[in-house]
Every structure is written in structure tokens, then in C-alpha cells.
Amino acid sequence: MPITSFKSRNKSRSLLVGNAYYPGPRAVFAGGYSGGFLNVMDYVNIANTSNAIDFGDLIQAKYVLASCASSTRGLIGGGSTDGSTGSNVIEYITIATTGNATDFGDLTVGRYYLASCNSDTRGVWGGGYNTSGHHNVIDYVTIASTGNATDFGDLTLSRLYLGSCSSPTRGLFAGGAEASYSNVIDYITIASTGNATDFGDLSAASVYVTGCGSSTRGIFHLGYIAADSNTLEYVTIASTGNSTDFGDLTSARSNDGAASSQTRGLWAGGLPGNLDVIDHVTISHTGNATDFGDLTVGRAYLTGLSSGNGGITA
Image 1: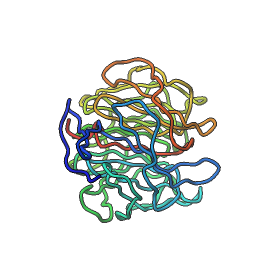
Image 2: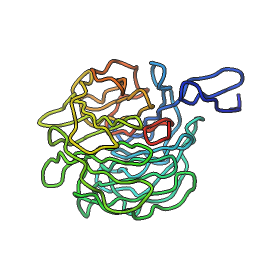
Image 3: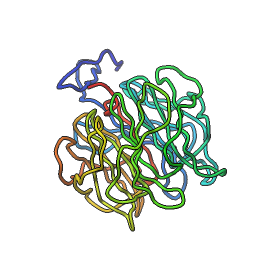
Image 4: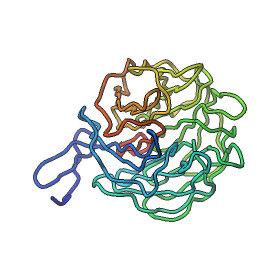
């Protein structure tokens, strides 16, 4: 049936297909690795606990990529197709439909193990790694158009394995590593350009960090500290300061993917064991995660995006 309209309900978008409403927003998890590089994309409706459903395929099978989204369009950028070379490809999808990704343009620097954040209009990628080394580069695109990315500025530290989250005005990049693990949280004003500024610190220097959140609160999974970790910490995005304990995922893991609505955060997949598990939390309340459902393919090194993330005006 054709998609006919969107309707606002309880501050989230609901998709009208025929005469039935399906609760939105939608999270899409893309790419990853499980015995080989994957082009798989699967999705869930964040409001309802359930197993993921096949969405379509990426143009390229790749892992350790990073994604962002507006309320209608998801962008997936960077990553690696061979485990050593950084990709500069940005692909896009229309989140409300299903289908394969389409070419959008190129990042300014091909790289993997990068992170991404967004506002309603702009997608931003920061950090990463390629054969020339670690990067502090930040670049951006206008999500509604297609085309190559433009230089935004620099992170305070060159690093990979970092995580990110957004409000409609601010993007945060947390953790990662260059010569050693970092606990640094940087922030940018998404609508402008310029170098990142120090925000505060995570409680521990960590890598394989993943993040999501509402328009006011960001939550980071500290994926690997001295071992795989289940630690979740949060910040108030509009302020600056160190992160605070939020709770725990259902198990210790790393290299997962994260996505959120304004009310619920999801973490999917990861190591050890190329997990298929999806966990969820209520963003406004601290506490431990609970089971949400399963991915269509258990995998690690994936990325997550959603049509209702914290960077989108509630």
C-alpha cells in the first residue's frame, strides 16, 4: 500500500499506510560484520518491542561505519569494505519506506571507526581512521540534498572508536583512542562551523563508545574500558560537565550500534559472539536496560540511525 501521510501523535510521528497507523519513529541498523562484511539493513518501530525486519541493502558491504538522520532521510557514511581501507562513500535511505540505499556523495576524507550526529537539516561526521592515521576531521552535509561533504572543523583530539549524540543545536563526540584511550567529550554547534570545544569527561577512558539520546539528554555506552563493558552514562546536552552513571545494558559488550526516539534508546548487536540482541532504556529515567527484540542477523561493528533521534526537534 502507498504511504499517504504522517500524523503527529504523542510527540512522535506515526506512519499512515492505507487506513492503519504504525507507531513511529523507526530505527534502522546498517552494515556490520559476522564472518564477513555485511550490507544488511534491518529496522524496528522504536515504540514497540519486537524483532527487527529486513529493510534492504547498502550499496557496499562494510563495517565500522557511522550514520545520522533527519525525520525522513537516513545517511550512512564511511566505514571499511576490506578491514584496512577507509571508505568515503555516503549512502542514503528514505526511512519510512523499505529498499536499498542510494549514493549521496562523498566524505572529505575516507575513514572508518568514525562517529556521526545531526540536526533536522545537517549531518556531521567526526574522527575516524584510515591508512594515513587517526583523524580529527569533522565534515558535514545538508541531509535533504545530495552531494559531497564540506569541512566543518576539527575535534579537540584525533581519535577513532568514538561515540556521538545530538540535540537539535549541539553534537557531542565522546571517548575513543589515538595513542591511548580517551575519556574526552567534545561538542560542536551543528548549525555553524568551527572546531570542537571541551564538554567534560566520561567516568573512564573508553573505546568502541556508542551514543544516542533525546533532544536534552545524551546516553553513551562505554563499550570497552579494560574489557567489554555494560556501562551506560548520561549527560545533559545543553550544559557542559562530566557524565553520570545511567545504568547497565543486559550484558557486557562492545562494537554495537545505537539509535533512539525522544523517549527510548536502543543498543543492538555487538561482541562477543556477533550478538543479535537489541536492548532498550527509557531516556528520561536512569536504570538498567531490558530486552527489546533481536536483529535479523547477529553482528558487530554496525551503525544505527532513527527518524526521531535527539537531533530532530521534538
